[in-house]
Image (cartoon, rainbow, N blue to C red; front, side, top):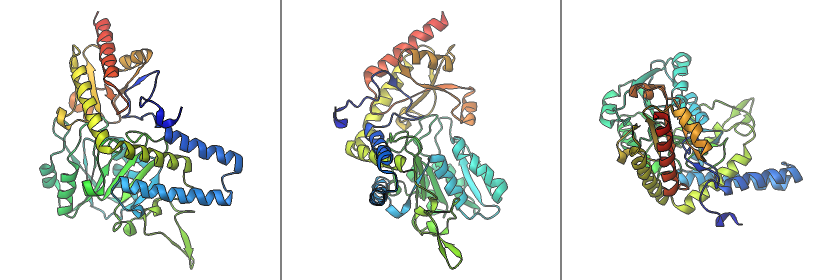
Amino acid sequence: MALDDQAPHASQQYAYFDTAAAAPPVPEAVQAAVEYLQRTAVDGPYLPSFRREVYEKLEQIRASVAGFLEAAPEEIAFTRNGTESISLVARGIRWQPGDEVIVPDTEMLSNIAIWRMLESDAGIRVVPFAADPDGMLDPERLRAAITPRTRLITFVALSNVTGAVQPVAEICRIAADAGVLTHVNAAQAIGMMPLGFRTWQADFISACSRKGLRGIEGSGVLAARKNLIPGLTPALAGWWNTGLDAGGITLPDTAKRFEAGGPNVPAILALGAAVEVAERRGIDSIHCGVRDLTDAAVRGIRSIPGAAIYGPSDENRLGIIPFNVAGVDPRELTDHLETRGIIIEAGHFMATPILNAYGISAMARASVHYFNTIDEIDRLVAEITAFAGKEAA
């Protein structure tokens, strides 16, 4: 069966509701990686003509990713994951002691740890910012939090914990008006909703490809504004991103300066294939479909006796539904659902401050994507209801 003829469902065995952790990659992404690896096994990876072909393909993918993010090719760097992309921004800026970085309490560990490290390493000051009780950021309150020392605002576009879709464009506009840089973590948003430099007006966008974009693990991107790149110091240096000149080194004035050493060719090829699939389906179509599925899942879970859903109002939620059911351990629920052919996740999701705000230590989380169906959602709701009933008995 040809790839294009396959059903859009991720699995015939499982109803998979864990895209927020990692989605099943599209078959085209897997095929792109496997075909490359199989050819290297036969011909070797450095057959000269083959290597030229591969490097030309990587630059074609750089251009396609740039188009997907409303950027120029020279503004795109390939990374291993979203965490690396965030760290490249954080380590790349030339900080002055006392510079302030606003970090909301909506963030998970990857957008907290590196900034805390820079407090001791570079003398910056991390300024916490509280979201409202629904996990939403108030742009006007953010405007009031900006001081003459504020250098950067870093925040997630779509929360992996609550599913909250933040007013990214408005926050970026307010920051730009104040001369403050913005970094947007798009790990959950990419492949799920329209985004990019033109849509958001951000200075940096970081993302992995294994979630909404449905690439394979070990692949990410960083988009950095062209005018900012020459002033950024790469955290890694060596073959691929540097050259020698009269005893010193030279760096490209493009985002390729953040790439050091041999590129992860299979993952980048898979990234390119995943972008092609997303563009073929249409990001607006994906967004609308995921929103409809989200609404259906929220309605279904709310119908379960004793269920509590966390996070924003329905119009501000996309794809991710965190919940608990009274008297039910979320981890036991997750294990039970797997035996019934349904995959969700449970835990603290590296976002303890958010859970503390709800007075809980763990939650269950169902996350949908376009490959899910209403029938699968009905199965999910029925199985949770049955398990909760047995637990109550």
